[in-house]
Structure formats: C-alpha cells, structure tokens
Image (cartoon, rainbow, N blue to C red; front, side, top):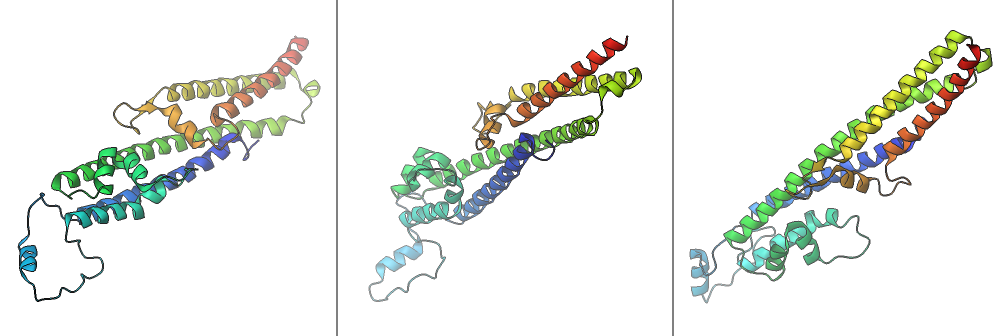
Length: 269
C-alpha cells in the first residue's frame, strides 16, 4: 500500500493543480500589466495631437511602431481583448472539452458586461478600464485563496501519508509472525498498538469530515464548500475521496487484525 495508495496519487493531483493555479496567477498579473498600459479617455474627448493630425491634409502619417499604444478608443478595446486572449484565455479553457468562443471566456472570467463592451468594441473609457481592473483583482484574490486552500490540502495529505506509511510498515513487518507462537505479553502489546492505530485513524477521519464542512471564497463572498473544491481536483481519480477511502480501508485492516489478536488473548486467559 505504501507509495501507491489513493492518497499518494491525490498528492500528485494537488501538486499538478498548484502548478496550474500558479501559472493562472501569472497570466492574470501579465494581463493586469497590459491593461494598465492602455490609456483610457472619456467619449468625445479629443487629444491635441489628434486635432493637429485631423487638420493636416498634406502630411502622410507613418505607421506607429510595433507595440505602441493604440490611438483610438475602439482599437484600445481590441488591444485589451487581444491581451486577454494571449494571457488568460489559454489557462481558462485548458480543461474544457468543448470549444469556447473568446466572448464566452471573457464573460466567464471578467463578467458578461465587460465581455460585451470589449467584443462590441465600445469606447475604452476610464469606467470600463476600472471595471476590467476590478474584475482582474477579484480573480487574483480568488487565486490567492485557492493557493492557500491547496497548500492546506497538501499539508493534510502529507501528514496522512506519513501516518499511513508508519502503520502499513508495521503491519508488513509483523505480517509473517504467528499469533500462536506469541506469548501473552507480546499479544497484549500488539493489541494495544492496533488500538492506538485505530484511534489515530478514527481521529483523522473526523478531522477530514470537519474540514469538508468548511467554506472557501473561491467563487466570491458566498463561498463554496471545501469539499466541492477538493473533489474537483480529484475528478480523474478512481475514488472521489482518496484520503477518506484509504484511511477507512486501513482502519478496517487494523480492526480485523486486532480482533484476531483479541481472539488469541481470550484463549490465554
């Protein structure tokens, strides 16, 4: 069982999820930087340089250098939309089986109103820029919360694995020992050791159940159950609750061994 239990596989899933969440956080930070770099203006406002350009009829304008700030509100919306497509979108659709349009992804990540404004190429106003930045901040807070939750889950799995490996190692070491050849003291020591293991495993099950009733703010102020977030991480595993499954199974093994030892003890009395 050691090294190949559902809990060991669960830890691998958590490590992969932590990497994905970290990359998602980096993508949002890059997107935020690119949004900040796009200037906004009120509808109808005209910049002095634009007025001078409009009055000039004899000078041919050279194309702006690559990467320069777009000159019109509409082209700025395109710039923001393209920045989203290049940074956040690949991480947002990575786990989707069906194709999703850019507007659907923007709506899912930044709200429907922002998606409509960006895709319809509305004016890139200070209000729209502020809304985009606030939506980004909301996602970044959620990512931070999820990173903390995954760290807690990682710690819980590592502690469980340490305990599971200890118990399994002892069971393997004593598996070939004949109870008939053990004296009373040896049998009593085995019984007490198994009782201790059962108590520890039962306590871990109780702690896990309590953890599942906790909430996280991953999906906003209302939050969702820790259980819902964690089980989504383990969706590809054969068991829905790997830690509980493994610990419960091991508890049953210890219980069966203890009953066998108790049967021998009662015969020696």
